[in-house]
Image (tube, rainbow, N blue to C red):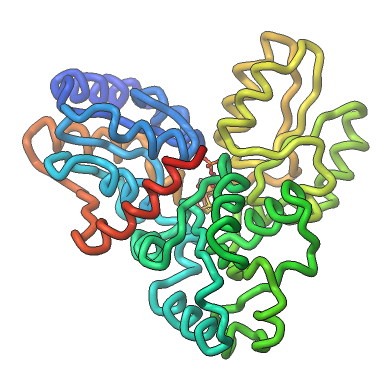
Amino acid sequence: SPSDPDLVERARAAKEKLGDKVFVLGHHYQRDEVIQFADVTGDSFKLARDAAARPEAEYIVFCGVHFMAESADILTGDDQKVVLPDLAAGCSMADMATAEQVAECWDVLTEAGIAEQVVPVSYMNSSADIKAFTGRHGGTICTSSNAQRALEWAFEQGSKVLFLPDQHLGRNTAVRDMGMSLDDCVLYNPHKPNGGLTAEELRSAKMILWRGHCSVHGRFSLDSVNDVRERIPGVNVLVHPECKHEVVDAADYVGSTEYIIKALEAAPAGSKWAIGTELNLVRRLANRFAPEGKEIVFLDKTVCFCSTMNRIDLPHLVWTLESLAEGNLVNRIEVDRETEQFAKLALERMLALP
Ligand code: 13P
Ligand code: SF4
């Protein structure tokens, strides 16, 4: 069993044996049994920044999903090896934009005569190939904690943005945070010819949103918000910007996982909160803040874990740490040099945002 004290002891012993050679990063959506072994925890922005914090560590064990491990590899030294404890820990949203589809989209924008005005802004939750495309075309990466600054920067470089792959983060930031209208946004569907858009629609749009979404956050609905407000009078609804526009519109507060944690730390005793993000994090926060008299519930009635985040469990972590301690490099994530060069350009633009 994952809470097996034997496994806990084995993970501890292997990590101790590795000492400074290993640096363990954990995303906030990871299981408690894994997060207890993280040297650093964070949202995807913080983890991208912190990945390079231990240049002396030979191994960076990334407890998160594939695109995060790729980003860590891009941002760390060539002699540092990034390891993902389960190679099947992908992200369904990142998979919704492939290099071929994005190249085809660029051709469509070129045909419509607007490619020169378009600046790509890609969410961190994308493959290294998409990040490289972004870097090649003068764009930047963003995360849920700096999407507005990234878009402001992009609109200083050009008059239109191609935002990928999360339509919701793109739309929510443009409309809720930057005062654009829903009519300023069009949805590019990679499964339809020309994205399902006419050249005229593309020419008049400010935000070209890729038709991708997060299946975990996509489960929250306007009904979830209305139900919880009825069940818990006075509740504060706090959601992640990967939620649908109508959910974000109905919420009281919106922000990244790191923002959610800070908001709850600052919340007064006796306050009540319904949180619309992944369940491992919400449960951990509910347990952490219950003794301070803060009531924290999950926004929806059904459970919703991120199944790929959950693939990293204690048995996989033990196997990884023990393998590394025995000198066997397993599950390395390595981005090829050319992709890395352009993806790094895009990531560094993000890290340099004011
Ligand atoms: P943040 O950690 O940036 O809030 O992102 C949430 C997420 O979905 C990561 O996969
Ligand atoms: Fe991808 Fe959503 Fe899981 Fe984040 S929560 S890793 S965006 S599927």
